[in-house]
Image 1: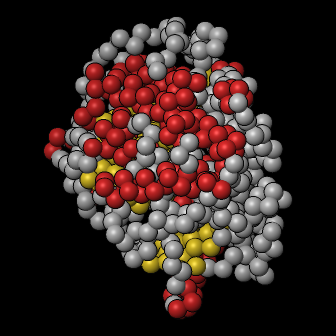
Image 2 (image 1 turned 30 degrees about the horizontal axis):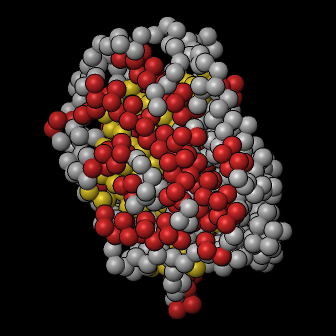
Image 3 (image 1 turned 90 degrees about the horizontal axis):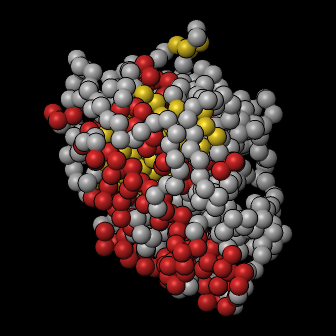
Length: 565
């Protein structure tokens, strides 16, 4: 769906071919064709599940991302931090989110909790600040959601998008252009749609960057498919028949396609319908601690409402893919795709907020059962919906649990890396784990820039991530363990073993991910010494990275919390 705006000052057709800076250190084990520093395009989706893309088993039409995957590498085990703000902080800094002050969401907790301040602290540096040192033009179009200071103050030369976390896809007034005074687009009444506009501005920014004869870093952070679920009706309508089959059928079909693709093998088991952990909406609604219901157990009106919700979500992913196609076509037409590293991923697992029915009007307990003509209005301007925990479970196939939680369904993201000049493999799956904090060191290495030790006289925290450059071509990454915490949900992965817990007072569970990738067989009772050792390792990390003490109840190590909190 092409954008409908009018660029007032720049002509995208202007093009001066970018020339690389010389005398760079070799970037082994990259191909000799990658002697020039690459452009870098980082694409981030919002609340996209592990299996939503066609190339990860989904039925949503994503031909452009599927083509990108065929020409590059797909990570089978790429991790985020379970939620929006912490993931974005980790991406931008190469650190664990608590080290940046964003262990939770923007807005912050009481100041005694250093890891939960609600904004990125000043000693941390961000990708655009570092790449600027290497002569890169730094561009961002999309969702910021990192609090103050904003994207320009943090190193981006150009910005358009949504500063806060979520809002209407139809209302242009919710989106901002910085620095002030820069050229803006205008859209006819009723023609603004944020996914299109974010891409429009990204293309404009690239046109301007080419005139500077410098490599560029573009951070393209779509707010799709995050709620409120909004999409053009004609795109929604084509998906409704698919989702009238229900989430049980969709989960089975996705899992079968994942097997056919080679993403999963015989060790993987499709999880049962996932539990809905107690929360402030599910518990009073009677869903807390129960499993998602069987699709066929619901009446026809409820199934019709829920099918429409998922169809809107699918339409949002479809439109995002179309826009990614626009950008890739632009790179291709300017001869830049071969030496541009394109990375695509999601910020967390699919969003179950807060129970199987989803919510309406705002995030919270209100649900409206849409019937008959009301169904046709869903997803249009002035509406507000989410799709609920049943569809989130399907979108995270084959895993269980969701965004917020540190089991695989909450922290595993599709991740595609494409760079013809530097990645030798085509269509391969990379099986070793990667993490979103690995993006900063990857980009630092490829840009040939030194990561700063000091900023304004203050020591900069060293990066926690590892460069993914070896993994792009099948070489091992050197890493002892990965760690997580969000809202008291916590985990550590060390090699094949993973320790995870739900809620601040929840007991540790132990999984052998080599034999049990979908975390169905808790072996904690049979391996108490391993649980003890890994828990101590997690606790040492948590103290070092400002995870504990935390603002949740109970404090870590105290008596268990009330499960109905």
